Image (cartoon, rainbow, N blue to C red):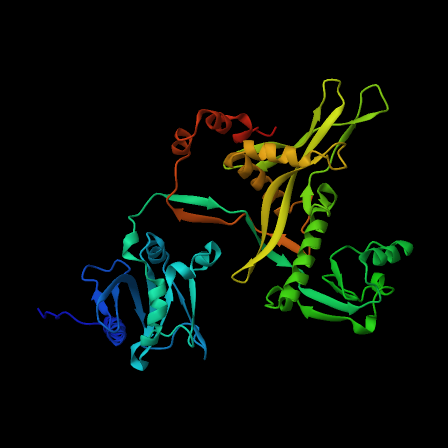
Length: 455
Protein backbone atom coordinates (compact mmCIF):
# COMPACT_ATOMS: atom_id res chain seq x y z
CA UNK A 1 0.00 0.00 0.00
CA UNK A 2 1.30 3.41 -0.94
CA UNK A 3 0.87 6.15 1.67
CA UNK A 4 0.46 9.71 0.42
CA UNK A 5 1.97 12.29 2.74
CA UNK A 6 0.21 15.43 3.95
CA UNK A 7 -0.05 18.01 1.17
CA UNK A 8 -0.15 21.80 1.28
CA UNK A 9 -2.70 23.24 -1.13
CA UNK A 10 -2.08 26.28 -3.26
CA UNK A 11 -4.96 28.09 -1.57
CA UNK A 12 -3.57 27.50 1.92
CA UNK A 13 -0.21 28.88 0.78
CA UNK A 14 -1.89 31.99 -0.66
CA UNK A 15 -3.83 32.38 2.59
CA UNK A 16 -0.63 32.26 4.63
CA UNK A 17 1.03 34.73 2.27
CA UNK A 18 -1.88 37.10 2.88
CA UNK A 19 -1.41 36.83 6.65
CA UNK A 20 2.35 37.38 6.22
CA UNK A 21 1.63 40.53 4.22
CA UNK A 22 -0.57 41.83 7.04
CA UNK A 23 2.18 41.15 9.57
CA UNK A 24 4.71 43.04 7.45
CA UNK A 25 2.42 46.07 7.32
CA UNK A 26 1.87 45.83 11.09
CA UNK A 27 5.65 45.90 11.62
CA UNK A 28 5.92 48.89 9.26
CA UNK A 29 3.47 50.62 11.60
CA UNK A 30 5.70 49.73 14.58
CA UNK A 31 2.79 47.65 15.88
CA UNK A 32 2.25 44.01 16.83
CA UNK A 33 0.50 41.15 15.03
CA UNK A 34 -0.98 38.30 17.09
CA UNK A 35 -2.08 35.40 14.85
CA UNK A 36 -4.98 33.20 15.91
CA UNK A 37 -3.61 29.83 17.00
CA UNK A 38 -6.96 28.02 17.39
CA UNK A 39 -9.13 26.74 14.55
CA UNK A 40 -10.71 29.03 12.02
CA UNK A 41 -13.40 31.05 13.82
CA UNK A 42 -13.67 33.88 11.32
CA UNK A 43 -10.76 35.84 12.81
CA UNK A 44 -7.15 35.32 11.64
CA UNK A 45 -5.50 37.43 14.30
CA UNK A 46 -5.40 40.69 16.21
CA UNK A 47 -3.56 43.90 15.44
CA UNK A 48 -2.22 45.59 18.58
CA UNK A 49 -1.45 49.23 17.87
CA UNK A 50 1.65 50.73 19.47
CA UNK A 51 3.11 54.22 19.77
CA UNK A 52 5.29 54.61 16.69
CA UNK A 53 7.87 56.69 18.56
CA UNK A 54 8.27 54.86 21.88
CA UNK A 55 7.02 51.42 20.82
CA UNK A 56 4.77 51.32 23.88
CA UNK A 57 1.50 49.44 23.43
CA UNK A 58 -1.56 51.68 23.21
CA UNK A 59 -3.77 48.78 24.35
CA UNK A 60 -5.86 49.20 21.21
CA UNK A 61 -6.85 45.91 19.61
CA UNK A 62 -8.46 45.24 16.24
CA UNK A 63 -9.60 41.79 15.11
CA UNK A 64 -8.55 41.00 11.55
CA UNK A 65 -9.97 38.63 8.95
CA UNK A 66 -7.72 38.03 5.94
CA UNK A 67 -9.02 37.06 2.50
CA UNK A 68 -6.21 36.55 -0.02
CA UNK A 69 -6.25 35.59 -3.69
CA UNK A 70 -3.63 34.69 -6.28
CA UNK A 71 -5.65 35.95 -9.24
CA UNK A 72 -7.96 38.86 -10.00
CA UNK A 73 -10.19 40.32 -7.32
CA UNK A 74 -13.94 39.94 -7.70
CA UNK A 75 -15.43 42.65 -9.96
CA UNK A 76 -12.04 44.33 -10.14
CA UNK A 77 -11.73 47.59 -12.06
CA UNK A 78 -9.12 50.29 -12.22
CA UNK A 79 -10.46 51.92 -9.07
CA UNK A 80 -12.53 49.34 -7.14
CA UNK A 81 -12.95 45.68 -6.23
CA UNK A 82 -15.72 43.79 -4.45
CA UNK A 83 -16.08 41.06 -1.88
CA UNK A 84 -19.26 39.33 -0.65
CA UNK A 85 -19.00 38.22 2.98
CA UNK A 86 -20.16 34.85 4.22
CA UNK A 87 -23.35 35.30 6.26
CA UNK A 88 -22.05 33.34 9.26
CA UNK A 89 -18.80 35.29 9.31
CA UNK A 90 -20.65 38.58 9.07
CA UNK A 91 -23.00 37.66 11.93
CA UNK A 92 -19.98 36.75 14.07
CA UNK A 93 -18.04 39.93 13.26
CA UNK A 94 -21.00 42.19 14.06
CA UNK A 95 -21.50 40.82 17.57
CA UNK A 96 -19.81 42.39 20.57
CA UNK A 97 -17.87 45.67 20.47
CA UNK A 98 -14.44 44.46 19.36
CA UNK A 99 -13.59 46.32 16.13
CA UNK A 100 -13.15 44.00 13.17
CA UNK A 101 -11.49 44.80 9.85
CA UNK A 102 -11.60 42.73 6.68
CA UNK A 103 -8.44 42.75 4.57
CA UNK A 104 -8.60 41.63 0.93
CA UNK A 105 -5.14 41.03 -0.50
CA UNK A 106 -3.17 39.80 -3.49
CA UNK A 107 0.24 38.87 -2.03
CA UNK A 108 1.89 38.41 -5.45
CA UNK A 109 1.50 42.15 -6.14
CA UNK A 110 1.74 43.19 -2.46
CA UNK A 111 -1.71 44.73 -2.66
CA UNK A 112 -4.00 44.79 0.38
CA UNK A 113 -7.21 46.74 1.00
CA UNK A 114 -9.21 47.03 4.21
CA UNK A 115 -12.58 48.08 5.59
CA UNK A 116 -14.01 48.41 9.11
CA UNK A 117 -16.80 45.83 9.23
CA UNK A 118 -18.94 47.46 11.93
CA UNK A 119 -18.78 50.87 10.26
CA UNK A 120 -19.41 49.53 6.77
CA UNK A 121 -22.42 47.39 7.75
CA UNK A 122 -24.08 49.68 10.30
CA UNK A 123 -26.97 50.26 7.86
CA UNK A 124 -29.33 47.21 7.91
CA UNK A 125 -30.00 47.46 4.17
CA UNK A 126 -26.29 47.30 3.35
CA UNK A 127 -25.89 44.34 5.70
CA UNK A 128 -28.51 42.45 3.71
CA UNK A 129 -26.35 42.62 0.58
CA UNK A 130 -23.21 41.40 2.47
CA UNK A 131 -21.18 43.24 -0.17
CA UNK A 132 -18.04 45.29 0.41
CA UNK A 133 -16.76 47.63 -2.29
CA UNK A 134 -13.12 48.60 -1.74
CA UNK A 135 -11.78 51.86 -3.18
CA UNK A 136 -8.20 51.25 -4.33
CA UNK A 137 -7.15 54.85 -3.79
CA UNK A 138 -8.42 55.22 -0.22
CA UNK A 139 -8.69 51.73 1.29
CA UNK A 140 -5.15 50.44 0.78
CA UNK A 141 -3.79 48.60 3.82
CA UNK A 142 -0.35 50.04 4.41
CA UNK A 143 1.59 51.88 7.11
CA UNK A 144 -0.01 55.21 6.14
CA UNK A 145 -3.45 54.01 7.36
CA UNK A 146 -2.19 53.91 10.98
CA UNK A 147 -4.15 57.02 12.02
CA UNK A 148 -7.39 55.66 10.54
CA UNK A 149 -6.91 52.40 12.40
CA UNK A 150 -6.45 54.36 15.64
CA UNK A 151 -9.91 55.88 15.10
CA UNK A 152 -11.43 52.47 14.45
CA UNK A 153 -9.92 50.87 17.59
CA UNK A 154 -11.93 50.81 20.82
CA UNK A 155 -10.39 51.99 24.14
CA UNK A 156 -9.69 49.10 26.48
CA UNK A 157 -11.56 50.91 29.28
CA UNK A 158 -14.79 49.95 27.55
CA UNK A 159 -13.90 46.27 27.45
CA UNK A 160 -13.56 44.24 24.27
CA UNK A 161 -15.51 41.14 23.39
CA UNK A 162 -17.11 39.16 20.63
CA UNK A 163 -20.33 38.01 22.21
CA UNK A 164 -21.50 34.39 22.22
CA UNK A 165 -24.28 33.42 19.85
CA UNK A 166 -27.53 34.85 21.27
CA UNK A 167 -31.10 34.00 20.36
CA UNK A 168 -32.04 35.23 16.92
CA UNK A 169 -34.98 37.53 16.43
CA UNK A 170 -36.80 38.82 13.37
CA UNK A 171 -36.85 42.61 13.04
CA UNK A 172 -39.70 44.10 11.00
CA UNK A 173 -38.70 47.46 9.53
CA UNK A 174 -41.04 50.16 8.27
CA UNK A 175 -39.35 50.04 4.85
CA UNK A 176 -41.38 48.92 1.85
CA UNK A 177 -39.02 48.09 -1.06
CA UNK A 178 -39.87 49.71 -4.40
CA UNK A 179 -39.73 46.95 -7.01
CA UNK A 180 -40.62 48.98 -10.12
CA UNK A 181 -41.49 52.44 -11.38
CA UNK A 182 -42.00 54.01 -14.80
CA UNK A 183 -39.37 52.79 -17.29
CA UNK A 184 -38.98 56.20 -18.95
CA UNK A 185 -39.08 59.80 -17.77
CA UNK A 186 -40.37 62.32 -20.30
CA UNK A 187 -39.24 65.94 -20.12
CA UNK A 188 -40.75 68.90 -21.99
CA UNK A 189 -40.80 72.68 -21.82
CA UNK A 190 -44.02 74.54 -21.02
CA UNK A 191 -45.26 78.09 -20.50
CA UNK A 192 -46.97 77.12 -17.26
CA UNK A 193 -45.39 77.70 -13.84
CA UNK A 194 -48.28 76.74 -11.54
CA UNK A 195 -49.75 73.19 -11.58
CA UNK A 196 -53.21 74.68 -10.92
CA UNK A 197 -53.08 76.60 -14.21
CA UNK A 198 -52.08 73.43 -16.00
CA UNK A 199 -55.04 71.57 -14.46
CA UNK A 200 -57.38 74.40 -15.50
CA UNK A 201 -56.20 73.91 -19.08
CA UNK A 202 -56.99 70.18 -18.89
CA UNK A 203 -60.42 70.91 -17.38
CA UNK A 204 -61.34 73.35 -20.15
CA UNK A 205 -60.63 70.60 -22.66
CA UNK A 206 -62.38 67.92 -20.58
CA UNK A 207 -59.20 65.88 -20.07
CA UNK A 208 -57.91 63.91 -17.07
CA UNK A 209 -54.43 62.75 -18.09
CA UNK A 210 -53.27 61.53 -14.66
CA UNK A 211 -51.04 63.20 -12.08
CA UNK A 212 -47.77 61.30 -12.49
CA UNK A 213 -45.87 64.49 -13.34
CA UNK A 214 -43.89 67.31 -11.75
CA UNK A 215 -43.81 70.94 -12.88
CA UNK A 216 -40.63 72.86 -12.11
CA UNK A 217 -39.21 76.01 -13.69
CA UNK A 218 -41.51 75.81 -16.73
CA UNK A 219 -40.44 72.21 -17.29
CA UNK A 220 -42.62 69.09 -17.02
CA UNK A 221 -41.22 65.72 -15.95
CA UNK A 222 -43.49 62.70 -16.13
CA UNK A 223 -43.70 58.93 -16.31
CA UNK A 224 -46.51 59.57 -18.84
CA UNK A 225 -45.60 59.98 -22.52
CA UNK A 226 -45.77 63.75 -23.10
CA UNK A 227 -46.28 63.29 -26.85
CA UNK A 228 -49.79 61.94 -26.15
CA UNK A 229 -52.76 63.99 -27.36
CA UNK A 230 -53.70 65.34 -23.91
CA UNK A 231 -50.39 67.16 -23.58
CA UNK A 232 -50.40 68.96 -26.93
CA UNK A 233 -51.89 72.11 -25.50
CA UNK A 234 -49.69 72.41 -22.44
CA UNK A 235 -46.14 71.62 -23.57
CA UNK A 236 -43.96 72.20 -26.61
CA UNK A 237 -43.91 68.85 -28.41
CA UNK A 238 -40.70 69.80 -30.19
CA UNK A 239 -38.89 69.88 -26.82
CA UNK A 240 -40.11 66.47 -25.60
CA UNK A 241 -37.26 64.13 -24.68
CA UNK A 242 -37.36 60.77 -22.94
CA UNK A 243 -34.72 59.21 -20.73
CA UNK A 244 -34.16 55.98 -18.88
CA UNK A 245 -35.59 56.48 -15.39
CA UNK A 246 -32.30 55.35 -13.87
CA UNK A 247 -30.83 58.75 -14.80
CA UNK A 248 -32.99 60.16 -11.99
CA UNK A 249 -33.35 57.08 -9.76
CA UNK A 250 -29.57 56.59 -9.45
CA UNK A 251 -28.56 60.26 -9.63
CA UNK A 252 -26.26 61.78 -7.02
CA UNK A 253 -27.48 65.28 -7.89
CA UNK A 254 -29.85 66.49 -5.09
CA UNK A 255 -32.14 68.30 -7.55
CA UNK A 256 -32.67 65.20 -9.67
CA UNK A 257 -33.22 63.11 -6.54
CA UNK A 258 -35.85 65.60 -5.39
CA UNK A 259 -37.61 65.47 -8.77
CA UNK A 260 -37.63 61.68 -8.70
CA UNK A 261 -39.01 61.58 -5.16
CA UNK A 262 -41.83 63.92 -6.21
CA UNK A 263 -42.64 61.66 -9.17
CA UNK A 264 -42.76 58.64 -6.86
CA UNK A 265 -44.97 60.45 -4.36
CA UNK A 266 -47.47 61.59 -6.99
CA UNK A 267 -47.46 58.06 -8.41
CA UNK A 268 -48.18 56.69 -4.92
CA UNK A 269 -51.13 59.05 -4.65
CA UNK A 270 -52.47 57.85 -8.00
CA UNK A 271 -51.85 54.20 -7.12
CA UNK A 272 -53.88 54.44 -3.89
CA UNK A 273 -56.62 56.20 -5.86
CA UNK A 274 -59.99 57.13 -4.34
CA UNK A 275 -59.76 54.49 -1.59
CA UNK A 276 -57.20 56.53 0.32
CA UNK A 277 -57.20 60.31 0.65
CA UNK A 278 -54.09 62.50 0.57
CA UNK A 279 -53.95 65.62 2.71
CA UNK A 280 -51.49 67.96 1.01
CA UNK A 281 -51.43 70.44 3.90
CA UNK A 282 -50.44 67.77 6.43
CA UNK A 283 -48.58 65.63 3.87
CA UNK A 284 -50.20 62.38 4.95
CA UNK A 285 -52.48 59.68 3.55
CA UNK A 286 -55.62 58.59 5.43
CA UNK A 287 -58.77 56.51 5.14
CA UNK A 288 -61.78 58.57 3.97
CA UNK A 289 -65.04 58.98 5.93
CA UNK A 290 -68.10 56.88 5.23
CA UNK A 291 -71.78 57.85 5.37
CA UNK A 292 -74.81 55.56 5.53
CA UNK A 293 -78.48 56.41 5.12
CA UNK A 294 -80.42 56.40 8.38
CA UNK A 295 -83.16 53.77 8.35
CA UNK A 296 -86.55 55.35 7.66
CA UNK A 297 -84.99 58.69 6.74
CA UNK A 298 -83.42 60.43 3.77
CA UNK A 299 -80.60 61.67 5.98
CA UNK A 300 -77.17 60.08 6.11
CA UNK A 301 -74.74 59.89 9.03
CA UNK A 302 -71.09 59.13 9.55
CA UNK A 303 -70.32 55.51 10.41
CA UNK A 304 -67.10 53.77 11.34
CA UNK A 305 -65.66 50.86 9.42
CA UNK A 306 -62.75 48.38 9.55
CA UNK A 307 -60.15 47.02 7.15
CA UNK A 308 -58.60 43.57 7.06
CA UNK A 309 -54.92 42.66 6.95
CA UNK A 310 -52.89 39.49 7.15
CA UNK A 311 -51.17 39.18 10.52
CA UNK A 312 -48.69 36.46 11.45
CA UNK A 313 -51.05 33.50 11.20
CA UNK A 314 -54.58 34.82 10.79
CA UNK A 315 -56.62 37.62 9.27
CA UNK A 316 -56.95 40.63 11.55
CA UNK A 317 -59.17 43.69 11.44
CA UNK A 318 -58.57 47.25 12.55
CA UNK A 319 -61.04 50.09 12.89
CA UNK A 320 -59.66 52.48 10.27
CA UNK A 321 -62.38 55.13 10.57
CA UNK A 322 -64.12 55.69 13.89
CA UNK A 323 -66.72 58.23 14.96
CA UNK A 324 -66.75 59.52 18.54
CA UNK A 325 -70.05 61.04 19.67
CA UNK A 326 -71.32 63.16 22.51
CA UNK A 327 -74.10 62.03 24.85
CA UNK A 328 -76.71 63.65 22.60
CA UNK A 329 -75.46 61.65 19.60
CA UNK A 330 -73.78 64.54 17.81
CA UNK A 331 -70.31 63.97 16.35
CA UNK A 332 -67.53 65.00 18.69
CA UNK A 333 -64.68 64.09 16.31
CA UNK A 334 -63.60 61.38 13.85
CA UNK A 335 -60.39 59.37 13.89
CA UNK A 336 -58.85 58.23 10.59
CA UNK A 337 -56.04 55.71 10.25
CA UNK A 338 -53.23 57.53 8.44
CA UNK A 339 -49.58 57.29 7.48
CA UNK A 340 -46.73 59.58 6.54
CA UNK A 341 -44.69 58.25 3.63
CA UNK A 342 -41.14 59.23 2.76
CA UNK A 343 -39.19 57.78 -0.15
CA UNK A 344 -35.60 56.96 0.80
CA UNK A 345 -32.67 55.44 -1.09
CA UNK A 346 -30.28 53.08 0.69
CA UNK A 347 -27.41 51.42 -1.17
CA UNK A 348 -29.00 52.13 -4.54
CA UNK A 349 -32.40 50.68 -3.54
CA UNK A 350 -35.50 52.86 -3.15
CA UNK A 351 -37.86 52.29 -0.24
CA UNK A 352 -41.06 53.85 1.08
CA UNK A 353 -40.65 54.52 4.81
CA UNK A 354 -44.11 54.16 6.39
CA UNK A 355 -44.87 55.98 9.64
CA UNK A 356 -48.35 55.04 10.91
CA UNK A 357 -50.26 57.89 12.52
CA UNK A 358 -53.81 59.28 12.81
CA UNK A 359 -55.80 62.11 11.26
CA UNK A 360 -58.60 63.77 13.24
CA UNK A 361 -61.56 65.64 11.75
CA UNK A 362 -64.71 67.11 13.32
CA UNK A 363 -66.98 66.17 10.41
CA UNK A 364 -65.06 63.52 8.45
CA UNK A 365 -63.63 66.21 6.17
CA UNK A 366 -62.17 69.20 8.00
CA UNK A 367 -59.37 68.92 10.53
CA UNK A 368 -60.41 68.99 14.16
CA UNK A 369 -58.93 71.91 16.10
CA UNK A 370 -57.92 69.55 18.93
CA UNK A 371 -56.02 67.20 16.60
CA UNK A 372 -52.69 67.66 18.35
CA UNK A 373 -54.18 66.80 21.73
CA UNK A 374 -55.97 63.74 20.35
CA UNK A 375 -52.79 62.54 18.64
CA UNK A 376 -50.50 62.98 21.64
CA UNK A 377 -53.06 61.22 23.83
CA UNK A 378 -53.27 58.13 21.64
CA UNK A 379 -49.49 58.02 21.12
CA UNK A 380 -49.03 57.88 24.90
CA UNK A 381 -51.32 54.87 25.05
CA UNK A 382 -50.10 52.88 22.03
CA UNK A 383 -47.37 50.28 22.22
CA UNK A 384 -45.59 48.07 19.72
CA UNK A 385 -48.41 45.59 18.89
CA UNK A 386 -50.80 48.38 17.88
CA UNK A 387 -48.15 50.15 15.81
CA UNK A 388 -47.11 46.88 14.18
CA UNK A 389 -50.72 46.10 13.27
CA UNK A 390 -51.10 49.53 11.64
CA UNK A 391 -47.79 49.12 9.81
CA UNK A 392 -48.78 45.70 8.42
CA UNK A 393 -52.17 46.97 7.34
CA UNK A 394 -50.73 49.94 5.45
CA UNK A 395 -47.91 47.93 3.88
CA UNK A 396 -50.32 45.31 2.53
CA UNK A 397 -52.76 47.90 1.25
CA UNK A 398 -50.01 49.90 -0.52
CA UNK A 399 -48.42 46.83 -2.13
CA UNK A 400 -51.74 45.16 -2.97
CA UNK A 401 -52.26 43.97 -6.54
CA UNK A 402 -55.22 41.71 -7.32
CA UNK A 403 -58.41 41.55 -9.38
CA UNK A 404 -59.95 44.43 -7.44
CA UNK A 405 -56.78 46.51 -7.66
CA UNK A 406 -54.85 45.62 -10.86
CA UNK A 407 -51.16 46.29 -11.19
CA UNK A 408 -50.39 50.00 -11.36
CA UNK A 409 -47.84 50.61 -14.18
CA UNK A 410 -45.79 53.37 -12.57
CA UNK A 411 -45.10 52.06 -9.06
CA UNK A 412 -45.05 48.70 -7.28
CA UNK A 413 -43.72 47.36 -4.00
CA UNK A 414 -42.55 44.16 -2.31
CA UNK A 415 -43.37 43.15 1.26
CA UNK A 416 -41.97 44.95 4.29
CA UNK A 417 -38.23 44.52 4.69
CA UNK A 418 -37.49 42.08 7.50
CA UNK A 419 -34.08 41.35 9.05
CA UNK A 420 -32.69 38.59 11.22
CA UNK A 421 -30.91 40.11 14.23
CA UNK A 422 -28.98 38.60 17.10
CA UNK A 423 -30.57 39.07 20.48
CA UNK A 424 -33.60 40.86 21.80
CA UNK A 425 -35.50 41.35 25.03
CA UNK A 426 -38.59 39.36 25.90
CA UNK A 427 -41.73 41.48 26.20
CA UNK A 428 -42.43 39.89 29.58
CA UNK A 429 -39.10 41.19 30.88
CA UNK A 430 -40.01 44.73 29.88
CA UNK A 431 -43.43 44.46 31.47
CA UNK A 432 -41.98 43.30 34.80
CA UNK A 433 -39.99 46.53 35.00
CA UNK A 434 -42.93 48.85 34.32
CA UNK A 435 -44.69 50.74 37.07
CA UNK A 436 -48.27 49.68 37.76
CA UNK A 437 -49.98 52.40 35.63
CA UNK A 438 -47.68 51.69 32.69
CA UNK A 439 -48.26 47.95 33.01
CA UNK A 440 -52.00 48.59 32.69
CA UNK A 441 -51.38 50.49 29.48
CA UNK A 442 -49.37 47.58 28.10
CA UNK A 443 -52.20 45.21 28.88
CA UNK A 444 -54.89 47.47 27.40
CA UNK A 445 -57.02 46.03 24.63
CA UNK A 446 -55.91 48.58 22.04
CA UNK A 447 -52.31 47.44 22.49
CA UNK A 448 -52.99 43.81 21.70
CA UNK A 449 -53.07 42.13 18.31
CA UNK A 450 -56.72 41.16 17.94
CA UNK A 451 -57.78 38.72 15.25
CA UNK A 452 -61.17 38.19 13.69
CA UNK A 453 -61.51 35.26 11.35
CA UNK A 454 -62.96 36.33 8.02
CA UNK A 455 -66.22 34.62 7.12
